[in-house]
Image (cartoon, rainbow, N blue to C red; front, top):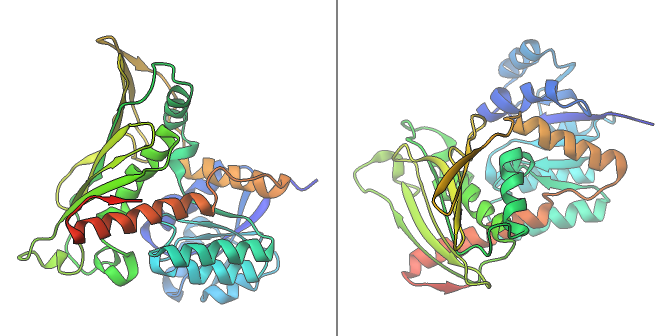
Length: 332
């Protein structure tokens, strides 16, 4: 039986060359066969650097390669649907980076295209394959310390000067909220095991900073879940907020700080006032998600992070922007 699947990577963003491509060395079931960049010079340099067998100067050329089983889409957010739909029609399974897309409609189109083509679709929620997050999910879902009452999450960093696609609403779908705030949204959902029923958000967009003429600098929001659990979250491109979350029950708190980084995660449980560190391994999160998706393809298994998971987050993202614009709490 086949033990590996052949992958192609679309897009030469920093995350592709800095994290995704190097991770294939740690993913035994995923073989990087091809890479496509619209910049031929950058494509050749990347191919030489990582010894990628096939380098294409257009995305369509890679998608036409009959040997590619899976495509990892690492293009700008607003192009995920276009490239996912093309890949599905070309007979490829797709792993799309988060956020899934910039609108609910485009997410739904991605899901439909892959379903109609009989191809699998996953969204790149690397944290859901990471040991610290998996242990938090277990503790929360099994109610080891009781029902979750409060979830607090934040993720942000200081962004450099333009131009960059993160600061272009048409490509990114917003500022830090869809970029790194989506980690907080996803975490509150996989910790609570619920979908929010009520949300409220506020944005800050300084008028005197040219970086933020098109998108927000910072966002803060809260969500209420059916069980009564509340989530308080924040994200920013203006401050070194870091990435962390904490969920609290009546008697305990579980903290992962840092939580959304690529490595160096640290977990602490404070049970009845006594802090206890939890010793878990740090892994290559990209390799873990790619290896898992390869296994899903090889053995026809459902993925842990399907298109519906990405769609749920984008629905919340758009509702948060709607809430901020309306200046009031909204029902989901």
